[in-house]
Amino acid sequence: ISRRDAGHRQMFLHPEKGRGIAPSMRRACNYGAKCYRRNAEHLQSCVHPGDREYKLGVAVFSDELKPEFESLWQLFQFYDPEESGHLMHEEFRMAVRSCAEIAGQELSQEQLAQVWAEAGGAVNAYVNFRDRKS
Image (tube, rainbow, N blue to C red; front, side, top):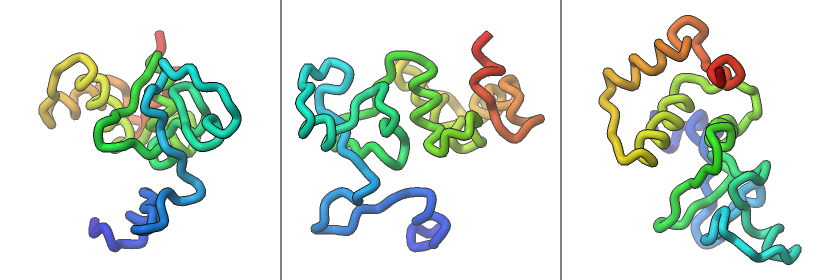
């Protein structure tokens, strides 16, 4: 998909150069879950792990920061920005890659396909967290 394609622009928000962050996006706090700042201005301008807006396509990370998660549920919610309760194939792949990165591992395409199939994605075309938590 070309980055100029309308479908791409609908999936991924792109702030205009020189204008900063789009109104629907919020900057991820540099301190993440360890942040101690609780003033209203900071909480309005920054998003933290556990916040409802801490989602793919909404939270903007500086080059030095990566998303952080305090639980698998937070990871799932991050990659489910529409709050559908389901991860489609690409969302699932990104979530699994995040898990592997946290564990200091890298997964091959074959391993990702196997995990997708084992999680029921090959049958349902999505993965539901509720089905996976047991």
